[in-house]
Length: 267
Image (tube, rainbow, N blue to C red; front, side):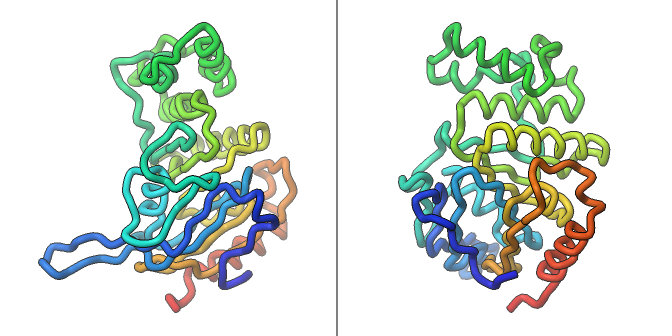
């Protein structure tokens, strides 16, 4: 464990750079403000699966919003592949706790929404949409509407809709938090296999220590508001990683260390 951000192995492979980022929100009173992040620094390597853990209100979702381009920092800079983040872009895919599918569109048309909005739908894009539906196990539900899909199926449809844009970076904000235990395990297995196949860079926010250790290459534990990095952990568990790794001594030991850091003092 360390108390500072783990350095990138090689600066040339850094995809995401967060430097001195601060973000404040106005409170109810005229002079009251809440500081979500204060001088926050982070680097994410190309192809890395990074998990962010921290108490509610520590700025995890705020950081993802800024990386997605949905909001701007009050100070500091965020870059992706060397370019400042100034707004949303298809190279950054975002998945939330609730999959936001358009109820009036079929599964296939939901997947095609991004290319269609950019006027880029042709035979090749339609073929890729069908391939992605097969990849996520929804080839038989291509013509179904969201209300006809289970919770896990809607999450997989949302994955396909993001992946058709070929994102360099996937930002995931507690995407499995609202799922039942069985569906959550199925989605964790699905994500592990998908990442191990494509190695998309992922920043994954979760409150679940076991989920972070199971999925991540590296875990960053944040303090309470204002959010700062308290500790980082390299996850040296072998890949490909199956769900039975949770029963190993190495997994249990690392899970305990991460939990102790998460529950430690704020300073």
